Image 1 (cartoon, helix red, strand yellow):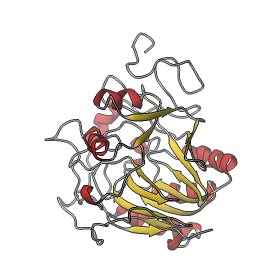
Image 2 (cartoon, helix red, strand yellow):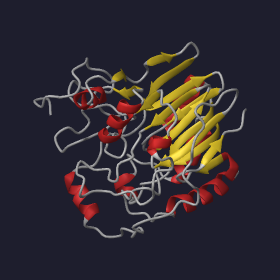
Image 3 (cartoon, helix red, strand yellow):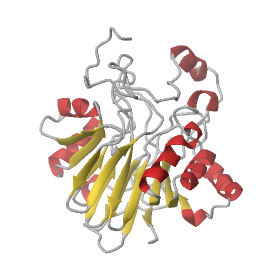
Image 4 (cartoon, one colour):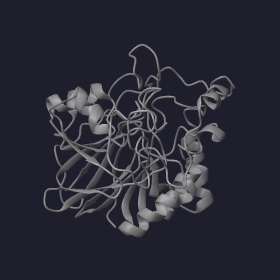
Length: 333
């Protein structure tokens, strides 16, 4: 691997970068091609419907929210609109029909975006957690750049991918532990998560993956795009560093089969445990019900979350799996 050139990042060696690829310290690397084929041809894949209508209409967000309001609107999968303190933030925005390098094949969305693109409020910041196609959608970033010119925040190496498509984009590339400031009283910290990255078969783990903490006068938001549970290590570290959160946005889908997905995608039981470990008062579940990436059925994450909440003594009002178009006004704490 040391003979391969990293096309995205050439920074110094660290405790999670060996000079060519990034890795999860004391964690697990993604399984390889042989295991991928075993999964793909091993059966057990649930059949999703071709189209689904969300129980919520497409939202038409206010231009801004102020005061102590923290409002989350689900667009779909890992794409959320966060409105707080007059700031509008999008996470991993995808309005494309497929999360794939190709327009004609690959995972296809079965539910329309929860906000029509034309109805977006002014977008100030876009957080891109890593470069998998269901999180980094260049077509959507181009549209956002043309109409909103947001500031993009992303882990190391992903800035290179985005700048190739959008040379004029404003991007903050961040390593784990870095912090950037917006306005006088809002900061974004880049924090570890247990995952990996790839855009092709030749660039695995050559750009970093991360979670982010948004600190505002109205509270702290912990946004996790994708992560394996990793014995809760990163959740404990986030609580120790940041002291807890008003809200955690946590992935709850794309987790079966466990033998293949465990290191990269937590399941709902682990998500609830993660909420408790990071000391979040509320959680919003995402990364389910939009595109089929793995074996579980379309409703399985929500059903499993209900069981996990009961098992761990967390009331359903505290951890809400958000459907496309659903709006969550997070209670003040």
